[in-house]
Structure formats: C-alpha cells, structure tokens
Length: 190
Figure 1 (cartoon, rainbow, N blue to C red):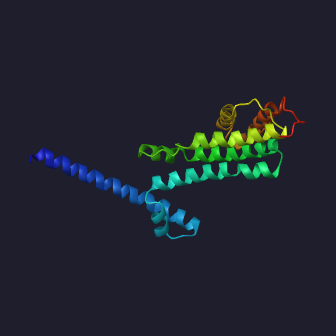
Figure 2 (cartoon, rainbow, N blue to C red):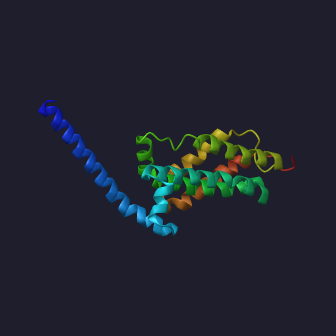
Figure 3 (cartoon, rainbow, N blue to C red):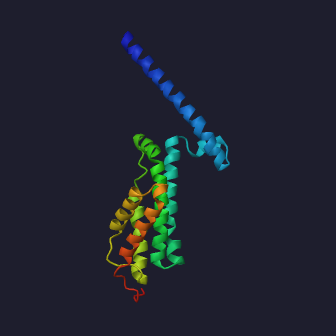
C-alpha cells in the first residue's frame, strides 16, 4: 500500500468524522427542541425519525395529508364554492410552510428522497373533488381544469405568500373564485 493511498484513507476517515460531528451538533441543537415542543423524549424522536431527512420528509407529507384530508369535511359542511374558498386559504398555509421548509426539503432530495412524489396527484385530486362538488351544486363552473386551478392557486401563493402580502393574496384568491363562479349554473343541483 502506498503512502498516498493511506493518506487518502486517513483524509476520508477524518472527513467522515467531521461530518458526523457536525451532524451531532445539528441534532443536539434541533432534536431536543423538537422533542421538547412535542412533549416527548429525544429517544422517541430518534426512534420515529432516525435522521433529519426522515423527520423533514415525514413533516412535509403530514402537512400534505392534513391539507388534502380536509376536503371531504369542507364539501360536507358548506356549499362547494365556500369550501373551495376555505381550502384555498389552507392551501396558502401549506405553500407558506413548504416555502419555509425549502432548505430542509432540498436536503431530503439531495439524500435521494423524493418528498414530492405524491404531491401533485394528491393536490389535483383535492381540487378535482372541490370543483366537481361545485359543478354538482351549481356554485362553480363545470368546465374548469383541476390542473389549471392548481397552477393558478400555486401562482397566487408563490407571488404573494409572505405574511406582509396576506391582504393581496386574499384579493387574488377572491379574483380566482370570481372566475370559478362566473357562468356557474346556480339553479343546477346534482
């Protein structure tokens, strides 16, 4: 074995040790705080989420599920146009959370994860359910693509998703809703 090979192995070993030390420091700063806020011990945190990436991925998927799982209740509790309007506000909260997690989500992707694998499909299905309910109860147009509404809503929250832009975002949501109501058949009941 040459001295160059030994030196490279020693460098690789030192790099690995430095990476592990940095990870421990990061987790010791973040992990206990997360566990404390959740009211659990640090061991519980690491049993459920063995890495920061696993925690970030699970948190993102949980937010997506919370958002999409709210659709049936919104449809059941109010006219569909009002349900969609309420859901667009929840969608804005989701987009804001996602924006705040951007660096952490990039870390998940860099480690080989794909937190967005099911995102588009779940969001399209949620919009489709809301739009279908609106067409059925006559409060929303029946000729609108769920993918177009997803793109429109995403654009609103990407352009005006900062807390200081909340009033503007709500005005844009109202404009979108006006367009979705235009030409609806209010006398139609599915």
